Length: 204
Image (tube, rainbow, N blue to C red; front, side, top):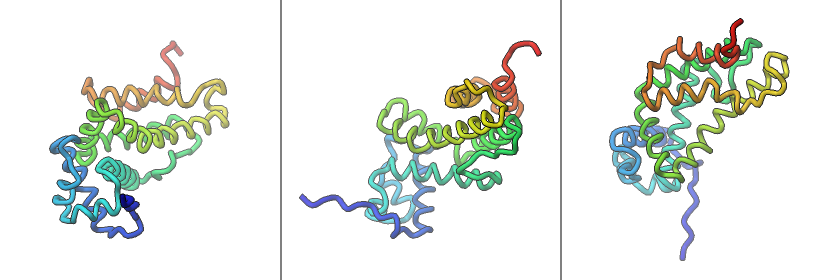
């Protein structure tokens, strides 16, 4: 039995790659992940199905890369580096800046519709959920953890604090409110999350 050819990213046309990314994100928002197919993505992008299979192994791979690319573009548009959080020495200000950019992203139709579709599918499709956690969420959480470790080294965060747990104090409530629509997603809300996370609820 002949081996399946390995996708070759070096042969990609940039115009075709962007068209495929846009088609994949649009389709998953319109019809959901289960009804999104490689054939549908190819037709929407105006390319042949084999073009996609030359560059990606599955529709999940296409969607993950498209989503990562969308996140990087959003970060650049917001004037941020996609591979690092700002580190001005003021932890609260840096976190508020990044979370405000996240608010903008969550309200961006390019991001919101496919993100909701993929989040919902990830709950019932363990393989897809694991791929998106590993490929998208964990790298983002790592950026926050590194920023909190930097704050620890500067004496702005207690040395006994676990950064991986601490970041959940402001990211998890935001994700829960966005996913379940339990309240508005605003700058004031994310600023307050940072204040509560860094200063606690005790009287000062």
